[in-house]
Image 1 (spheres, helix red, strand yellow):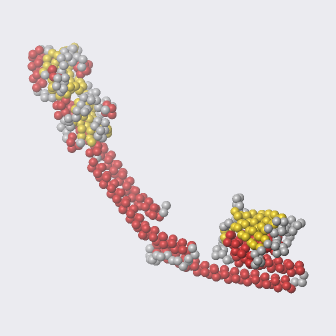
Image 2 (cartoon, rainbow, N blue to C red):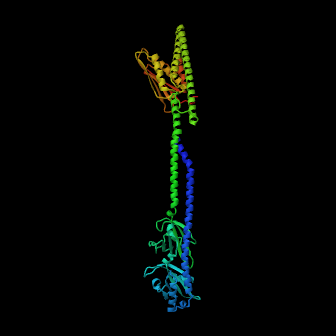
Image 3 (cartoon, one colour):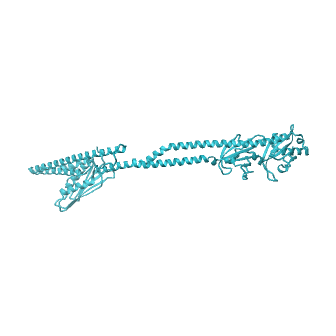
Length: 559
């Protein structure tokens, strides 16, 4: 993750508590608003239920009073009809009223043909009034003649324990609904009144004939038996999600169900609008913050960092004269740039001193090699025996070999790690100039992979190559014969490297086992092989000689 991404993340984390707090406030506000709507819906349902109760209870009191009138109790024909007709006209909510005998057959009545049949003995409200010996409310019904919506009620007439009949009436459902004085429009509310079976009798504001006479959906049927008022959220009645308050009017005498639903979307419209504005402001603030962080980050963070990195890359390439292009002010990056420039100046001075000292040391070492070579050469000329001259000449050759290895090693800019391929190539070029004739009869070929080795391993490697190539050029091609020396340096599958030096000369002398030599050259070779912890294999035949040296990976890192 880059710095700008971290900066954006930091902005988001800084804004996150505000977003969480806003979300919690929205949640708490919606919970409170939901509770408020639920309470309002239950209150309105209680108001509507109270209006229904007053009408039904008034009718109950009227029927109870009528049941005590002697003319009605005795079923006195015309007198009964006169009394019933007078009482019905006093109660506008009654569509019809009648008196029936113990079997439910009509004795007398007022407007009974419109809403009450001539025999009600089989109807539930009549049977229930007789069973409970009190006022009973029936179910929703419509008159066959004009289709008027009514609710049947009955009050029994008893003489002691003897059932004599009942006063029955048909209440106008429309009149019952008209008694509900609630402003439904401002609340986007709907009031539904059902009978004991959940059949919708009226729905306000009307007209709404879709549900009249139909049973309410399943979610509401379970509420009919509820012992107390409550609330529920549903969209089952009219595909509009509403918060409903309900009041079950459960008693032996009154059995209705009142349901008031408030449109949830309308009730939450103000909160939803405020939420949308809040979200828009949060998003806008977040975007502005991110934009400011992006612009400010690029100007005040990324640009100075890029300039610091650019200067560091120049130093990495070896250009220590590069400087950080920042104004050295009092800000953090200015002070950092000043520190970087001071460090670069110090490193540049130290490297110049180191380079000067290294050149001086190399010069003195090469002078020492040259002095030793001159002394050995002078001593060889003064030697009196051939053996002494030969020994001094070989020693002089080793000194020359060390000088070549040293010169080639310190010809590289980096002395802590040396690139093998270029090192061996340069070493073979020096050997070719020193050992090979100009007629091209012999040649030295190098085939090496690219690899880096520390000086502690490159020096023994160079001495081995120098020794084997020198011996091959001197002894493998007698009588000025043409020849070829091949040097290979490859990776090993099991790790480490393999060095091969092969020639197509005459091979080692007969009777001299490979690797068992006791001369100075073989001693030098074995010493360098042991220094590399390597294994050497020598194969010789009349067609040539091959030295194979397997060099393992370095066990301990270079100090």
